[in-house]
Length: 251
Image (cartoon, rainbow, N blue to C red; front, side, top):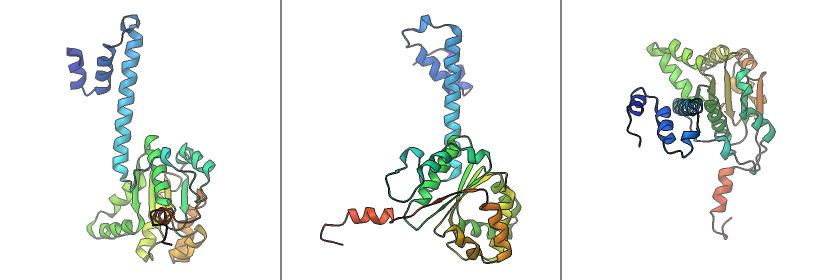
């Protein structure tokens, strides 16, 4: 390792990428043939790359994703009706820039949450802040926030997240307070941020599941009309994996 005042100063200034690049340059046989501008360019490029990597890591940590899912690990061979063309287009991220939503529906075991986490992982890579929350737990936290005075701060934080992943939509009956909280969240985000929703219910059934027709109209108007829809179908992936582990004489 290079033991040089410049190297030490770069580390003290927390310019770790530049320090690593400078250290590596000393081992390059073609170093003497490189101009000052070329060497400086490589050092600056390395620093930018290191910072981008650290920022992505920080965004992923703050997102608190349920699964460490990545776009590279998506298995398109699984028979679940995943629209590969649409999913790849979503990975490009233009839907986030245009403040659109993504709705992923299908029966349990088809990988809805995993795919949603892969999309959110990609959003973090593209530089967008993200957050994963289970809808039932979100409403529990909101109920507590109403009581301890954190409600406005909590709602404001949710409004600022570029990509909000709402997992398990529709699994529990909504209270009147929960319906109004949901409308508040989606109203703040409408045409300003993007939301991903996963649900076992088909989108056509969401209106009834919300309970109040008037609030349901308002909620879905802000969520569905500018959304991309991924409707999965087929047999549970988890069930298929369990079946593969059974002895041959078992059904």
